[in-house]
Image 1 (cartoon, rainbow, N blue to C red):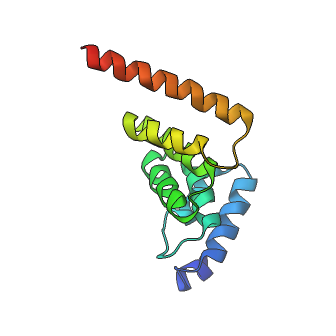
Image 2: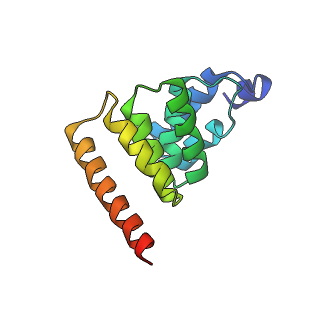
Image 3: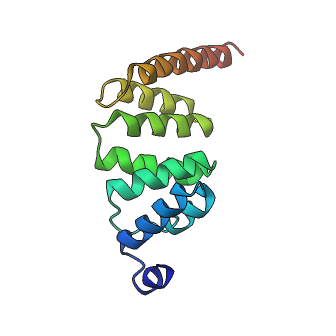
Length: 135
């Protein structure tokens, strides 16, 4: 598979296959390696696996970049907005995270548990910003 990837670096199929195989074997860090490369026009499937693995392995910059692209490619999917908000919060981009959480609530694809999580995060971010404003 690696030889095929080297011969044709922009093809997603082999990169995805290798990443899925490694992820299935619980080798998340290794699974992220073939997805570190970002093709010119990545698919939603490629970006979603890249974002999930990057988030799981604390590769926050890569996860943030992937979720940003996912919200551009598939803007009506609440999961991408939730992922983006979490990554923005990790990057201490609180007002951007609040906006992304709000977007997530207005989109499809979120469980009631995810919606409850978003409401909790929004309350926390609001209180953090109020505390900062008081200082």
